[in-house]
Image 1: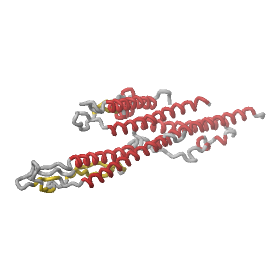
Image 2: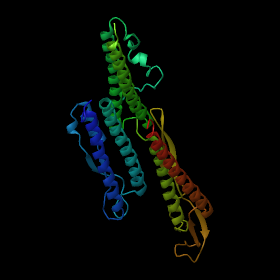
Image 3: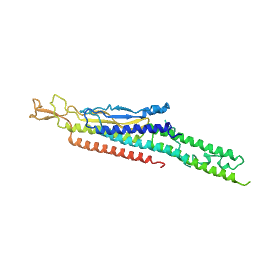
Image 4: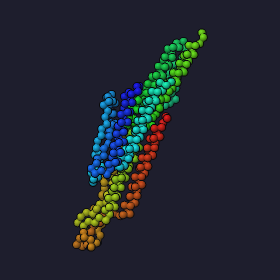
Length: 114
Length: 103
Length: 133
């Protein structure tokens, strides 16, 4: 176990992905009344999973895609409840990843401090 | 996929199991017993650390069935590390006591 | 295997009741929609929900299809109506506002229940994150 091994890099990448996800939820909510606006979402998990399997963590990416949900009359397809629940989900996942990263650092210190 | 997480049982944090020969540190082959005790403890630590690392990666990608599952794996790794350090310190202490003994 | 499954289940419930609310709103909007007797009446909208199971685990509920009420509606005598036929009849939807209002209340309460389930699940996950600390 090293300070920045594959596991910790994966956790750090997840934090970046979750940050992108949160920003897009906020962007979507801000544009809920913008005619023609399509909701966007960020996915980091699929790319990160492949990167971990092939042991090439630096190849992990964050994919941003447009929502394919049906649009309203004004061409907008943001759904407020999806965005709010998405924010909660992102927040919880962020808490989990932060907790995991802290646990990894704490484990390292345990072997040094005493 | 994450390996199944073993619950923390009294057996898995039993110092005798972590370093099976700890009790025999003071026998004739004192030095090698000490080495194997520490070696056994480090094997245990490395296994718990690996389980926790795989669980942390699964937590990053969202591939764990429950948050509790991850938290138990991480806590188990932390407790194993703390226990290993405690056992090592005691073992070093005991070893030094023996070395200071007047023959 | 899915992280935060309870959140997804509650969300699926919210989605079902949102669609039911949409259907009820459509019904209420058309409760007085009159059609000529040679055309079909506005048909009451229903949603059909089905429970979802994936790999033996619960995945909540989903609207699998819409159902429509009687296209014949009710024939009403209203000779002064511009859409009335020669005998003075028009077709109105076969819907009752009282039914729609009680459905509206049920759908709204059920939506709120799913939001409550979502919040409880969130609290449970937050508690799980405190294990070992």
